[in-house]
Length: 401
Image 1 (spheres, rainbow, N blue to C red):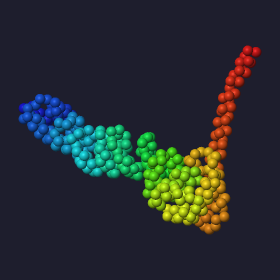
Image 2: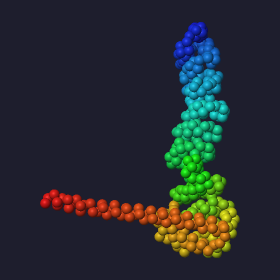
Image 3: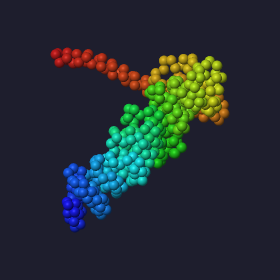
């Protein structure tokens, strides 16, 4: 029998020669017209080769059997549990590995093992969820880059929660057109935390100052992001902000002073637990007592109530009419009106509110000035373009003269 000759020869062969012969035997098992006795003998020989001290021999088996449906199951299972450089071909491609085994390998395997599994074709939801839950950052990135993987939205959120501070993960996710706004905001929050840690580590700012600046920058970016969020996703975004502790009075006030009434209404509905239509009714009711009750039910601080009260009054009086910039930025007229009306408030809590409103006023003034200057520059470009034909005509006259 050919297998007997193979076993006799392989006893004294060098590792490289054994690997080549093993590869030939495995291919013969898959593709040659062997008798049932020869097939059984070949399978026994390959099972014996699983104990070969050279990884070259076991790797040769893995490479031949990696994509085959006809490989011996016991050989595939043993190769999958071998050291990573042997197991990778099988882990990444073998159709004979069942999902439960792959989940166990993700939980117990090294990073190389997890990466190989994360790149498998037609990766299932449950396996993707396992990688997102316990996989390394490299494995999670491989999962995100796998075009054939079915990744549940909660698994994407888990990856953001675990590795959103890593630039490669953030870049992959932010490039996706189908990423929910709640997940985008979670990435934004991770980025702000990373930047705060960076400037603190460099001693550019104290930790408290850096965290405060990062939090305000994140709130500003979140309100701008909410301005571009489809209406049907606003509720999910508010739920995410509440669950992550970011749906604060400062952020909600910023949204209202930016004219984003939709975000304001959805935020109060999320915090109060009341239906959106009732919340909308209280906000737009001329009787302010209904809004005050809603405000308290939402659990917002009483110290900030005067600013919300005055902002709603200003909105009803049409202060927002004629303001530029959409609902993505603070409106200077609105902020200054609320600041002036709240200036008479007294107490320590009032001082904190007035300080916040002053920061808003400075930010709104700078944004307005920036827009004004941009418009001036744009007008200059238009004027230059209109003058260009005349300049060319004058130059032509000089040449003729």
